[in-house]
Every structure is written in C-alpha cells, then in structure tokens.
Image (cartoon, rainbow, N blue to C red):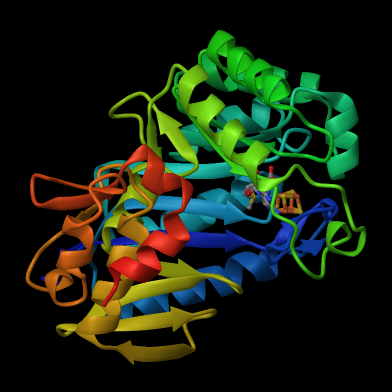
Length: 355
Ligand SMILES: C[S@@+](CC[C@H](N)C(=O)[O-])C[C@H]1O[C@@H](n2cnc3c(N)ncnc32)[C@H](O)[C@@H]1O
Ligand code: SF4
C-alpha cells in the first residue's frame, strides 16, 4: 500500500446496536441484540473504500470503535472491518485500536479473539460499582460482571479504561469518593468520569428526577480530582501520563478524523480544504479555516494542556480576555488552558474566549 501525501486521519467506526437502551442514553443506537452483522459489515467496508478513494491511502494513527455497543460485534465482523482498513489505508504499526465494551457482551474467549485481530485498548462501561444504581441506570450487567471483564482484560496486557457516571439522584460526595478509591484499588491506568446528564427523549428526561444541585455536582467534580490517583487530562478523563486515549487527544487537538457508520461525524481534509462529514460519507460541507479554528479552541480547551495558539487560532481567540482572567486561564508553552477554577465554568469561559 502506497502512503498518500495527505495528512494522517484517525478513524471512528460507529456500531449502532445495544442489547437494550439505558435509561439515560441519547446516543444514536438501536435496541437489537442480534443485528444483521453481514449487512452492517458490508456497509462499513464500502464506506471505508469510498473514503480511501477521496482522501487517499493516508496513514491512520488510531481507530476507535464506539457505540452503541461495539463489543456485541462478532470477532469475524471486527476482523473483516480491520482487514478493510489495512487494505485501504496505511495503518500505523503502533496504531491505537480501541473498542468500547459493555460488560455482559464480551466473554474472555471473544476478548482474546479481538486482541488477536489487533484491538489493543478496551474501554469498559462500568458506570457504577453498586448493583442498585446499575439497575436504576438500566444497565444489563452487575458490578461483578464488570470487575470480571476488567480483570481478564488487564491480565491480557492490553490498555484498559473504565467509564463511570456520577451525580445520580441521592448520590453524595462521599459516595463519589468511595467510587474513586475503588478505581484506585483496581489500578486503572485510564478512566472517564461523566456527570449524569439528563437528556430529552430518554426515559430519565421524562421522570423529573431529583438531581444533586450545581454546588454538589461541583464538589463531586473536585473530589474526583483530589481522590483519583490518575491526573485529569480532559474535563472528564483521567490517565497515567502516556496512557491518555490517543484517538480522543488527536480529535481534541484538531487532527483529521473520518467518521464511519450511521450517526458518525468526522472532519476530513482534502486538497487543502477541511470538510465536515455527517453520517454515511454521503454528506460533506466545506468548513472555513475560521470555523475549524473555533472548533479547535472549543475541543482543545476541554483538555488540561489546552489549545495551541498558532496563526489560525490566534485569529479567533480574545487574547485580551484571556490575559485579564489569570484565575481562570493560563498561558504555558504557547497554549491557553483553563485553571481548576476555569474548568468549573468551562462552557461559559469558552463562549467568552472565542471572539
Ligand atoms: C457510547 S457509551 C459507551 C459504551 C457502551 N455503550 C456502554 O455503555 O457500556 C459512552 C459512555 O457515555 C456515558 N454516557 C452516556 N450517556 C450519558 C449521560 N446521559 N450522562 C452521563 N454519561 C453518559 C456512559 O458512561 C457511557 O459508557
Ligand atoms: S450507554 Fe452504552 S449500552 Fe447504554 S444505551 Fe447508550 S450506548 Fe447503549
């Protein structure tokens, strides 16, 4: 395979099926335990071929299978998709290949098969160590199912991350601290801690739940930062340095990524121009350098290292505002980033930072 002269592109593959929908989830996925995997693979592979034709056989540093529930996919389907990526692009020899997994859908044999095919990072949807909370969230697994999967995955030598949700109705700061201590004991090298967001069009959205107030949520967020052994590197993500999710880091930094599958978005670069790509590779909108720079500020500011101030981003950043709020924003190595105080009001801060 001849490498294209175009810049490298990360690849995101969406797997839009779940055994059943969780009570809080607004992600695009269909409740379906036995999808037609052959048609799914055929569609995904034809998209891969289509993108290789228009972008070129670019190098690919990361592939991320997100969902939905990618761990529902049979290993043979995963192998066919990975083959198509290897045939049509130049997959880096040290590429990070992540799969999101829902406990209860990945046996140790299947995990071993996925590893043989190239998966080298597993992101496990643990959500909680409390079975009552898992039931309330509508999860299909128990805490023990998650712990068994984590244990097998960690022993297999791949990188393992856990997703957790905090700020459930009735949850206290000390509950969240307990969860963090358990995460420390298990010895994760990476975890994602998401504040429960009540989304419209979900069962939780219709329930009028008694959620913790903003002050409690902020205290939980601070307690997580103080209790976890892992440093925060993005608003919701924590990792031992060098164990960060490379795929997400690249996307937040503004690198190109191809989104494949219904419901996947991407930012691709063809002949010097950026395009927004929405679902199925059928729709492309050209985006201006200014829009791309604003997007880079928005995603970069979510990371602890912040956004690089270069000839593109400096045109859209209100430098005067940044300099006059040292309690919220800092400049290090030509990057602007949010301080701990700034992280607590990030959305508002970004709105003011962008000209
Ligand atoms: C696409 S799901 C990932 C994997 C897999 N589907 C699973 O749930 O195990 C990504 C993560 O987003 C988080 N999430 C989804 N909806 C959320 C919400 N409304 N509030 C907070 N976190 C949410 C969950 O922690 C979930 O693991
Ligand atoms: S949280 Fe994960 S398993 Fe639950 S419905 Fe959403 S995508 Fe599916």
